Amino acid sequence: MRKTKRVLLALCGCLTVTIASAQTMSLGECIRIGIERNLQLAEKRIDIQKGETQIRQSRAMLLPQVNGSLQVIDYLKHPVQVSNSVYLNMDFPDEPQWLRVRTMQYTSQAMLQAQMPLYNQSILAAIDAAKVVKELYTLSYEKAVETLTVQIAKTYYAAQSCKEHRLLLDEDVNRMTELANIAKALLTQGVILETDYTRISINITNLETQRAQYQMVLDQQLNTLRFLLDMEATDAIDVERMESALSIVPRQGMSSLMPDQKLLDAQHQLTEKQIKLTRAGYLPSIGLFGQTGYMGYQEKFGDFFKKFNNHQFGMAAVGLQINIPIFDANEKRLKVRQYKYDAEKNRTNRQLLDASLQKDYANATLQLTQNEQIFMTQSKNHQQAQKVYELTAHRYKEGVASMTELLQDDMRLIGSEQDMVNAHLQYNLAMIDYLRLENNLEALK
Image 1 (spheres, rainbow, N blue to C red):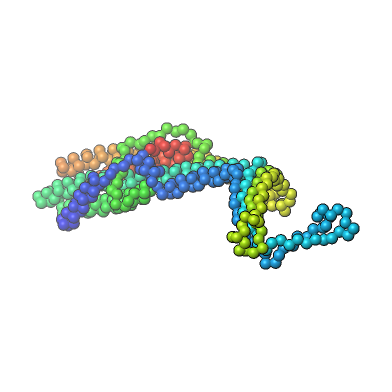
Image 2: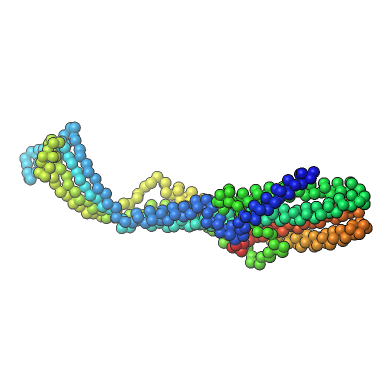
């Protein structure tokens, strides 16, 4: 029994040294580091960059486009051009003749072509849609920041609770150990029975077991916190101690611009832009085009290298091109109808989300108020249990109270401590949900 106690005390000493050397981080520091280093947020930031690139890509469609081409053709069968003699300066022949002109077997072509849109509503609508897509990526990032902040805060408060339980159990073990030393001395003098000393030893063992369990859960919470902060598993971190009093937050009312609401609004806006983009396909588009280059003809392929300059003919042209859509088999009309269904679905989801958030806010307000009252009640119970234990301990030293009474009051004191810490944790968790619905998670930092 003594050997087991020495081992446990040595482990506790090593644990105390490890925690003392660990970096104690506040909740605000954890949230800041998490936002900077979390890999999921890094992925969302890449999506924002993709959205910006998509806008630039859409705007680039308004710029001139220049293409070059080089072509060499070998006609395995000579092409023939047919013309009426009237078109060969033979006006009013008695019998018009059909004349055939055979072209060369080899043809080369080097061209430079340029195009530039003057009026194209489809391109302008695509730019507007790309802007909304980028906004969606930005709102998705804000939503991810909110989710990460809630995860870090809940993990941090849970770790705080486990640490507080363990520290309180340290005090309980020390207090019970002092009582065990007194009981051992009284047992030696024959004042108390051996069963009284045995009860104390059993209580010490139970308390040490609870302390080890809370330490294990604390280590698990710290591992989760390191994962959320993208820290190495070997990084020694610790959380601050839980404050003795509650952190009362001012109530500002439910926010009307939650990230979820803004996301649905942006999705609805994107649907409207997609309808506009589809309808723009009904409108004509106007553009400028121009081309210049050379065309060469040779009877033999080798002549391209011998007589290259003899049979090359230059050409250049500019023009105005108008594209008028006429019939697309109702493709655009049916696509617009589908987008309208999506828009109606977005409006329904927005109403449902508003009602759900109102319900959540009402429940969070009630839960926060209830948990605050529970903590106040548990704090009073702990104060009373502390006074009762101190009185019973004094009476026990005077020989008035029994060992059984002292142990019972000690267990009540330990239970009141645990209940108070649990009530504090539940209040903090309810506060996180309440601040999220107020869109005021900045208060945690």
